[in-house]
Image (cartoon, rainbow, N blue to C red; front, side, top):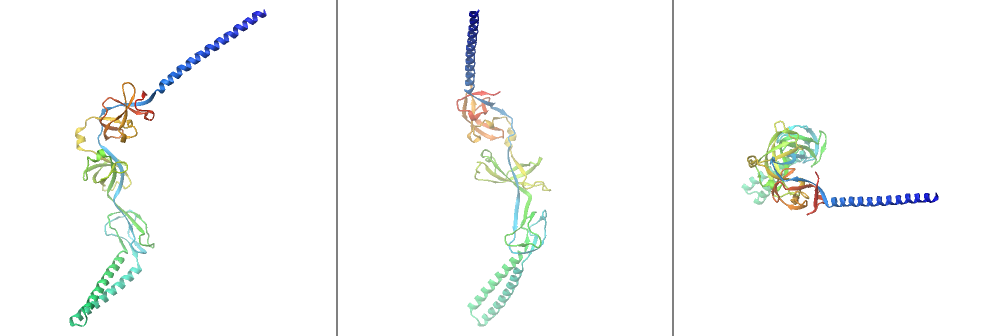
Length: 359
């Protein structure tokens, strides 16, 4: 009986050992298969792709900027004195030559009185010397000195009149008083700001245009302009300046003069959009071969994209590009219709690497 019991125990132990061995073998095979699968996946780079194709695209080139006043000026005081009167308020429309404020300058008035007296004395002395010269009572040298004294006295009088004239602050441009920095009774010194006047009858829109577009336009051409706050309206614009040198962003600054509406709907500081279009674009209106903007490796300046080849590898390809249409870029050469380009996944991609297209 004891022998039979020992045999049963031995059989159970042997069975457990066999089961454990088979489990280890199966786990090893499964681990190897998973490792093989991971290795196969890691051999390729997951990417998104797009087809190069012809598209009907609005070929208008747009550039954004901010409206600025056609003219703006901050009027400083040229004299010191007490502000006696302020003739305009913020929001007032003023014209050239209109008096904005009056400053009392006691010292300037005294200087003017003294200059007038000196001038009258110089006139009298000069007349006396001129008469005496005819009778031989004075020399020519004395007369010349008298004439010089009269000339200096006259210059001092004119200067004193100018200083007194500076007591009346007058507008030098047409426009609207945007800010008033003084009040009656305040005291100003030379250089103190008094008024800010802006002219928004016309405005300036400053934008930047890339080199592929700038060669198509010249100063004097008419440009359609839109404002973000008036999406359904168009304003007339004209190019008044094209920079001869590109900015740090490799674009060319362009200034456009925009005619405001009668009610001055456009305000300085609003966002505006210049729409650059040409008759050539309107007539042509043919599909354009384009590639998605996100396909470019390191931005448009590189002009490089990854093209997916038939064997599933990615080839870094240099292409020739044309106009920028926002999310699409015109293709002039280097790739053809129906070729596949990588649009995301560039960071892990190298030339010749295998790709796994994400669907």
